[in-house]
Amino acid sequence: SALEERGDLPITALHELGHALGFLPIVWDPKGLTVGLVGRDQPTPPGYDPRFIGPRAVSAFTRLGGNAPSVPLENQFGEGSRDSHWRESVLGRELMTSRIDRGVANPLSILTVEAMADIGYDVNPAAADGFALGRGRGVSQPLELQELELTLPLQRFDAEGRRVGDP
Image 1: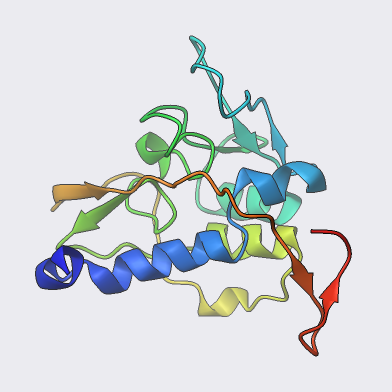
Image 2: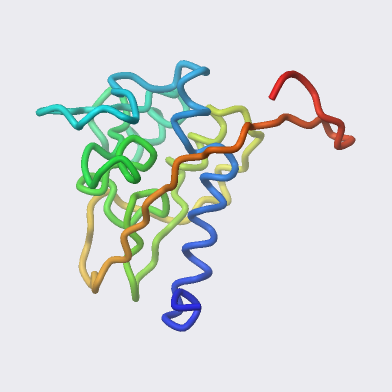
């Protein structure tokens, strides 16, 4: 109810929907889309630099002005934020960073759209919001989002709703 009262519920729900659709290391790692991640239960080592290497996301990052052959993932803020978001210090207000900036746009950028394509979704890149790297101005009291560890077994279903494979 506090999120709703502050007006943060819609953007928080959209962010969490991104995770529900697979914006998580548990989905990326088996597809070979990350490098440099340490185990979730491991402390953050000095100089930690986890990266997303999906080719479509890397291409989008370059188009946005990024100058690396990979996209930086969050490397701080604890295990609830680390590894499962774009790096806040580089991508600022993007929807899938670990903090939602109140009172300003938090766009769903071409970077996240193309990362979803790397995961395996059919996407429409033209539907992405406009976005520029960095924080910009007008940030007031960011809302930090932390992901909880998934404890339930994941199950896959086909288009008809039948369970497929092992959980």
